[in-house]
Image 1 (cartoon, rainbow, N blue to C red):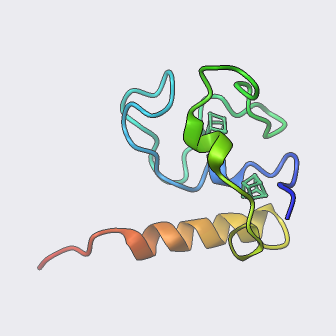
Image 2 (tube, helix red, strand yellow):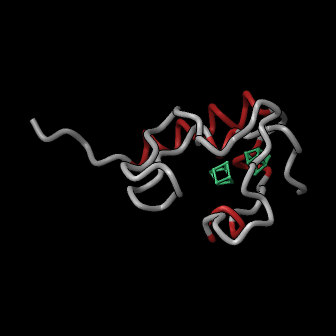
Image 3 (tube, rainbow, N blue to C red):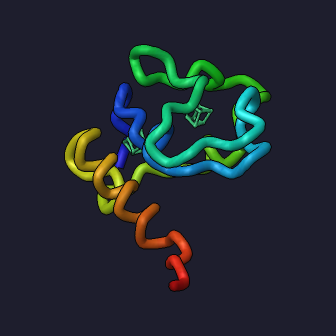
Length: 89
Ligand code: SF4
Ligand code: SF4
């Protein structure tokens, strides 16, 4: 599938490791907007060398991106939850 222009869910929902995004040295917690996502949910680093490689490598998939940005947010947040280490109590 083609990425939906203006969706931005994969720049908000996932956590991203420290040192991966320019200007976010602590990384990006799940659910927090990447600082490079503009008001139209477009990447301000698109086409620039400083854009992280994994951002360009990420491909839209129907199973993840769903039918709209809300569905994509839910799917990605669920994946985040499912892949977190469990609290050992
Ligand atoms: S979640 Fe999917 S459709 Fe939305 S911006 Fe990311 S790749 Fe594109
Ligand atoms: S750098 Fe651009 S593509 Fe990567 S997470 Fe931030 S806004 Fe999204």
